[in-house]
Length: 84
Image (cartoon, rainbow, N blue to C red; front, side):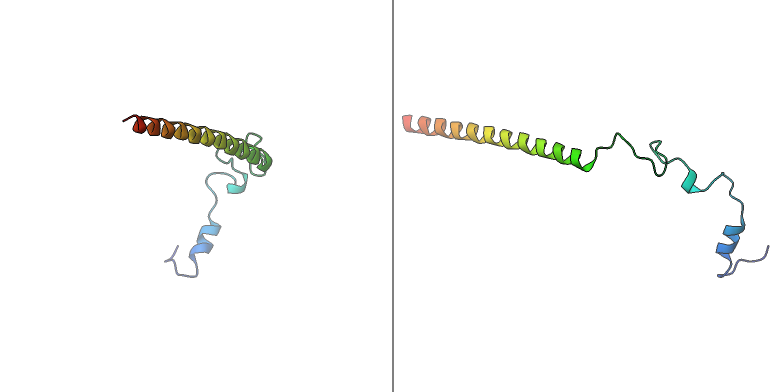
């Protein structure tokens, strides 16, 4: 075979046999999911929205509890300052 020129490299690559079986479209993808298959363990959009809503609600409740604790501590500090 001669020296490769700019017009020839892709043709040389295309003409070579594939050493490892079928092309990438038929190979297994990471995680064992075949191309075109649906991974049932992955949550859909509705499930993700429900999870995010539950998390937001939980954080709002936690935020309210923290604000109440801050208000209680401020009142305690004011009471202690008045005693002095």
